[in-house]
Amino acid sequence: MTEPSETPRKQLRGDAMRSLLPMVKYTSQNVPEDYRHLVSLRASVLNDCRACIATHRRDARKDGWSEEGILKAERWTNNSDAFSEDEQLVLSLTDAITHIDGDESVPDDLWDAAVEKLGEEETLNLLVSIVAINSFNRVSIATRTDPKRIEGTTEFDLSRD
Image 1 (cartoon, rainbow, N blue to C red):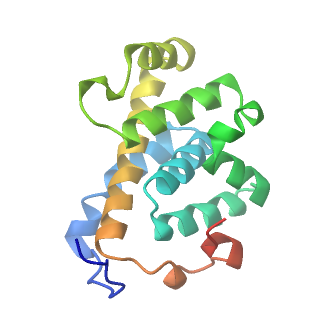
Image 2 (image 1 turned 180 degrees about the vertical axis):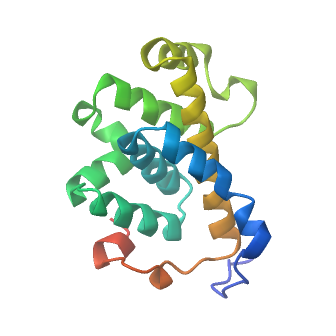
């Protein structure tokens, strides 16, 4: 395999981009803000989507998250004590769905715990949120979206910390 190119590609626009937006609108209305931040930060780091990491760090900061809190969410498995049981379920579900690889990727015990603790509707809403960010991660990586072109980002947002 050859080295990846840094050459930017045409960005998704128009109807193609608009086709992804209903998931975002749905989750913004049906998933608590803190859960959306946890999902977006963690999935973006797992996928190493630099543009999405920058975007969601910026958004979390705007909503009052500290840089330390953002980094803990991104590396939650090393900081699990910083998160409630519900938040740990959200992050575990994000990990499992982001790393999906066949029927056993989301174990029954994880799914059942999420349904029991968060409720079936909330768990399904989280699923939509996780699918949405993974879709945007894939689009941004495939089109090589330049994180430096995202408005309102800071050095922290763009860092590899």
